[in-house]
Structures are given as C-alpha cells and as structure tokens.
Image 1 (cartoon, one colour):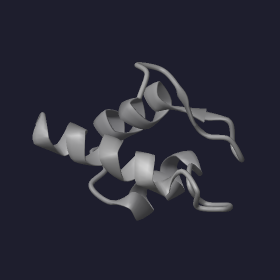
Image 2 (image 1 turned 90 degrees about the horizontal axis):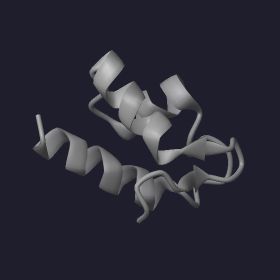
Image 3 (image 1 turned 90 degrees about the vertical axis):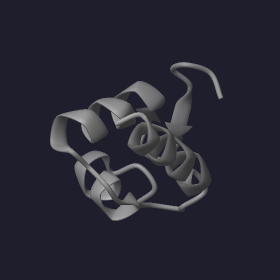
Length: 61
C-alpha cells in the first residue's frame, strides 16, 4: 500500500486522512474510523485496508 494511496473510493478518503484521524481522535475501532472519516461506510470494499492501517497504527502507539 502506497504511503498516501486512496483507500475509500466511495468517499474519496486517503490513507493519510485515516492515519491523521486515528492519531488526532485516538481511534481504536473500525467503527470509530467510519464515524470520523466515513471511510468504509458505503460499500465496505476498503475495510480490509482500513483494518490494516488501524492495526499498524495501534501497534506503533
């Protein structure tokens, strides 16, 4: 996955936006990310990538 690739095509959300939301709002769940960014809230295709990003960020805390 590229450093700033588009993750959610339905809502036009990039990886950097998800990472920023996780850090800024101390997000810990997929549901938190969906509420904060709307990524994964339409078709759900991007949820695999969102889970990977969340896991990486939680491991780096």
